[in-house]
Length: 223
Image 1 (cartoon, rainbow, N blue to C red):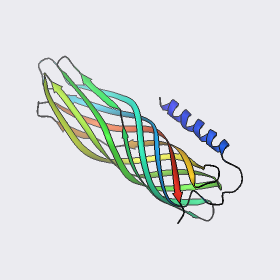
Image 2 (image 1 turned 60 degrees about the horizontal axis):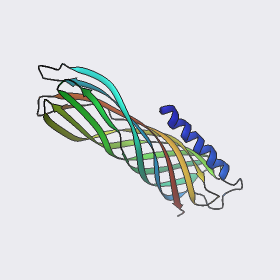
Image 3 (image 1 turned 120 degrees about the horizontal axis):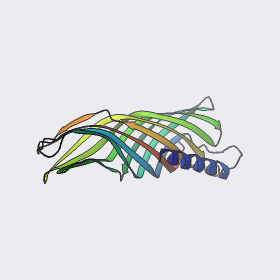
């Protein structure tokens, strides 16, 4: 799936570049305030160490994941300096549909998901032409996690927020030399670890991380 996400990203990028005209853009889509909406895939992975207090189940560890759809909204500002270099800041909000069933025993089970992610990243870019940009984003990402367990019919749910690191690599192209643009990117998020102790005597330590591939369409307000 990771290879598929990368392939889709590269294919969309090549298609968009072919659509863009080769003449210099009279209004740069790479400087000013911009907004964007996007969709893509979300590969949620976590290593889970389970501690089960039951006469029929034992402790277990697993490394599992799930793939779902993702949607995001972006708000940012970019500034061009020395003609080919771009610095900026980007705020993002993302949601997805991935759910991990991390452990299933004879009488116990658990699952976890991360639905809401938001953060702010520094953007560094390079303009190989007036209508194309290559960039990297890096910054903190806050996520809301949901972890639920079922121990012999006793259900316990833990919701918590965890701060992590978000790194993205992508490209952006002007659509027909206008302020409209399309961008393709691949992102990696890591949230360290978190130990959860449930009221039903069940505990788990999770190490969540995620890989995503997104395609965004946006508009830049030159100011």
